[in-house]
Image (cartoon, rainbow, N blue to C red):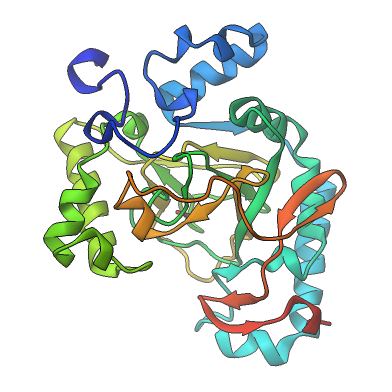
Length: 326
Ligand SMILES: O=C(O)CCC(=O)C(=O)O
């Protein structure tokens, strides 16, 4: 496929006046950037693969013993806190989309700190230490439709975000693996402000979580992928593998073929420490000036920081303070 016919020199050609400087990995001519030029040949190779595909897999990043121990401890933790978790279990008895479990369950922080190569790679791209903003734990596949994460994790400056996905069990077509649109991160950003004005009449009226606008944006991204002949593909991973996705990579979860099977996994949403994260009223208003430093407290585990949030939730319901878990 010929790059120049499809991609601009920046994925943000439609939003040239975005608020603040963009990270170098947002430009298709990134190899001319002095920060890329300073990288070791090892890091250049990783960055090139990441920039070509929009994701990068670190095989066997976490030991077999640690993944097995994390899952066993999770099962004990969920049983100890059955009063909280059991009402959320699906018809097969599984939990999914547990938000910020790492705040109440320290083995997940240990897991994060153990992913040394994947963290070093993100540190290089961010130009600073990688921290956890939020996380989602899944006991089964997510079956999420293809989407970009940037409308939900809108940083200032923009696109300073990665998804860091840990396989705690083998993730296959049977139990539901990740799906990606390889190269879809390089498709130009649409004119988001125009889309938002079509929905709400004015940029000031865009709420933080506008579900219809999110859906329209993601459907346009899916159509853009199709019209550029980019297909979604399944990425099967083994227990202990870690995958990093680019902020603009269209991705999701495959259909679960056997719903009796578990798929323990966690995705950490990472940013450089102190990078602020906003929502749709920032994403669809890219020129809006907002503070460039986060206001929330950070905690630390094994030299790595994570944002302090007040609650853990399941499927964005039932907020409970991390200190209330046993
Ligand atoms: O874990 C999965 O199956 C997909 C996760 C995903 O798409 C997301 O967290 O944005």
